[in-house]
Image (tube, rainbow, N blue to C red; front, side, top):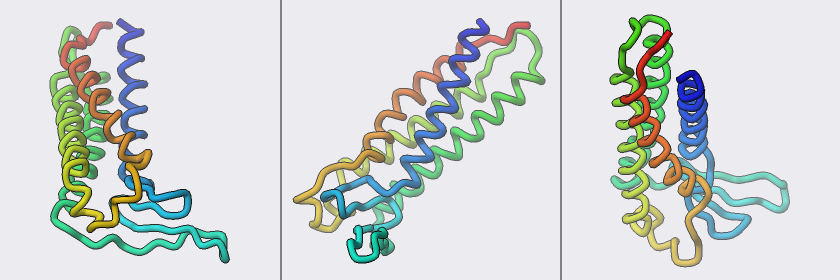
Length: 163
């Protein structure tokens, strides 16, 4: 049981880090090595200065929903970890981690909804500029987080506290 507890904790921290990176990094859509777009900015690499030049993305309803759902996913995952720590030290022997598991499952569902919306509506979000590019690594990272969050949520629901 100690191994399972350690495994779930490490998995939780890894998915939290992956969610944070997927939400904040700048590669949900890439055109080439010098231009990409994320949930917050459109960036291009300036060869003259050797720096990334970024402008705010045009706010569409679909983009705002993806932004809100990804932030909500990070919040649910963070709350889930804090609740897990409180339950780990304060819960009586034999108790189940229901609240932690449900928060983790909600984090997975919100990340799923955000990724699905971006997948289905990237043409509206990018406004016709998507024909030459492809999905970036942050988009893929968000999709990878979905099953990890759902699996860890199910493991938390079945995990019992033992001394």
